Length: 348
Image (cartoon, rainbow, N blue to C red):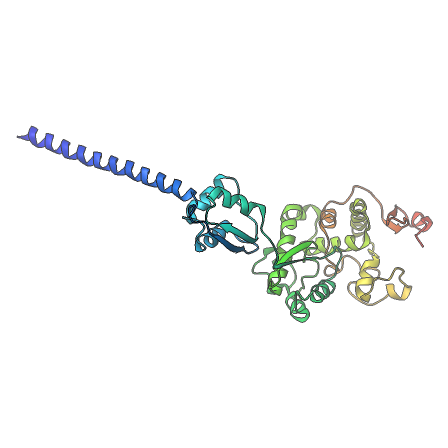
């Protein structure tokens, strides 16, 4: 009797395991079939063209939602998996697309990787060495921002420091002068002032993480001091190859306790870029005047480019203390002593 019961239990367990196995196989077959079907076009036999817009900064997840909502893909998760499988994650581009329901996933991903039309976008360039006021004026002239709104948002870093940790290192109430990265940007015409400022801060953050963050301790300067120095280098230098040397001159003068005597800082105070400063100009009272104050100014005087930022934390290994513009190409003569400096012939 016991043997019969034991045999019955074994048969029951066997049938249960067999059922589970069959269910697992059927599930695998179903999932595999569904996966393959999801790779296919949504409607190969009745193709339909659909216009979609992928906003700037859209993630793969956001793009999957856009395609699904427009009836161009079967499944959002499988789309995202296929994007990763094809090595296209992070490579899908913003723009306006005319896609078709006859396109399979691979074709859709290929098209999205090429980039769409940008008929609703506009490009603008922030030149290296531009001051905050100049940036605002340029964008306002292109009708991209309201001048007063832009200046109001950028006059205090508190408006953006919750999103950007590096801004928390600056002084309370400090403006974004120097931190709106100079570059060429493409934006939608409807982009707000906040979004435009955020794009420029995003670009600064990239350079900060790549070139500055790990070197701050090596130069014994704060982030604000580094960007301030970089902004002076930007305004003083004409040639990229000279920027590390200009940086070294200012680093050396700081170590020697000498005033930086940068004409660029006086030009910032005056609000104009005079070719030749008068003695009266160099005596203008201001904490930004490096002719009458020791050390660096309290904040940047312009937006430095990447070369100037890198030069600020990587000065050349030279012992120069002076430089003067002498070449028609914007080159300088660098000297070690004041006597040598006086003998260098400045460009007229």
